[in-house]
Picture 1 (cartoon, rainbow, N blue to C red):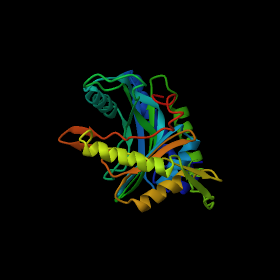
Picture 2 (picture 1 turned 135 degrees about the horizontal axis):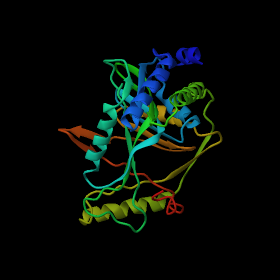
Picture 3 (picture 1 turned 135 degrees about the vertical axis):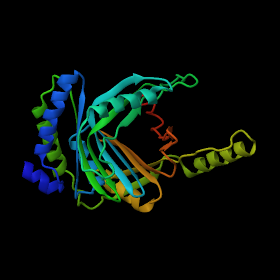
Picture 4 (picture 1 turned 90 degrees about the vertical axis):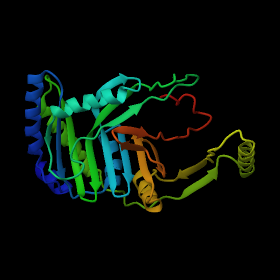
Length: 308
């Protein structure tokens, strides 16, 4: 398996490096009596992030893809969260402290000088349920997570990272071999499907006349001063005779909208994806600014899904 993985992924590290790092991390966890992160990174010749994201469904229930001009990242979720349920405006600081503490004890095997070699966390939170309201200044409970597998592509090259969170009672060799086995499955499934796209059929959810009436109503409301801006979305239902190819769709978005942020959030066989011209997150003078993405649900079946 070691030879196969090195040849297939084109990485510079051998899986034995991960096994040794897990042993070291487990010893640190026993000494410190707290979790220790093992993060092993190496350059890779595999730059097919879209295939990586699509293949992630074989090893992880949740996947994330994010891309902008010159920088892309694909994540397969790890099983471990760093902090749960923190609320309020100070939650970002507490989350940063948690990550900093984990970094201080991290057994990190990476190639120096290559951008993206340090662990990247992802954060999630639950939207408010129907009929509930957030208090002024309140922030919902959130969970900061590290991905088990991360593939990052920058102008300097591509980097594959494996993250494992070890506890004092963990079995380091078993954890490492489980990660390597999952990586082998990921490698085998990473190639984009060569099948031709099936025949797509499309129809408008809202008839053209009703859509035009909604636009006219929105324009009148703006002219009357009720609103400064109105976002209208016209639903289109698309049916494919074959399985929907998420990776091919993301590739088309990247080609057609090179100046946008391309994103995809996958859970099981479901995926929310798109291209946004707006900033998603920014860091300036030590302050993090986040722009939330607005999504849509099928109107008739939405109520049970909101907040889930």
